[in-house]
Picture 1 (cartoon, one colour):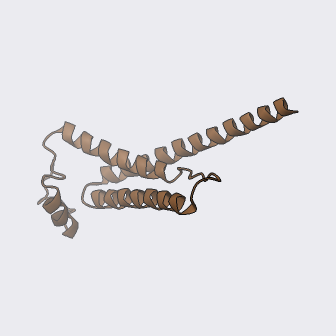
Picture 2 (cartoon, rainbow, N blue to C red; picture 1 turned 135 degrees about the horizontal axis):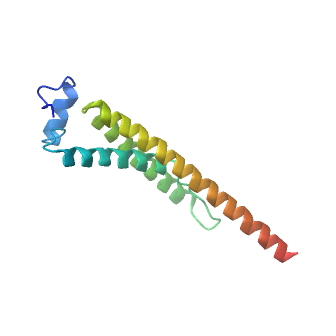
Picture 3 (cartoon, rainbow, N blue to C red; picture 1 turned 45 degrees about the horizontal axis):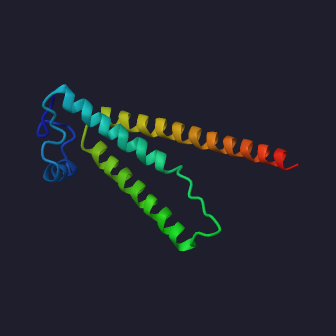
Length: 133
């Protein structure tokens, strides 16, 4: 592996990251490198999955509480996204590819999960209406 000093990606961000996360991205072995890739993938996947989290509002819920939950989730998603951006900037191209793959798979699973719940809800509504008649 290339050391941080020899890396063509050495820049302001590299020195900034080395101050807060000593040893990043100097991986001692392949296991450390794969674990870092997994963390970047998980961060991208979670950030994308959070973007499809539906905030449902009942009649009894306070509107301000629902907005605070939604804003908190949005803040968490932006934090994860910016942390992901910094980790991709300070490392090599493989981390970028893993982050993109995490976003793609997270988007697919979140939309698939959302569509499944919509279809399940519509089937429950139809069966309830059939029983009611």
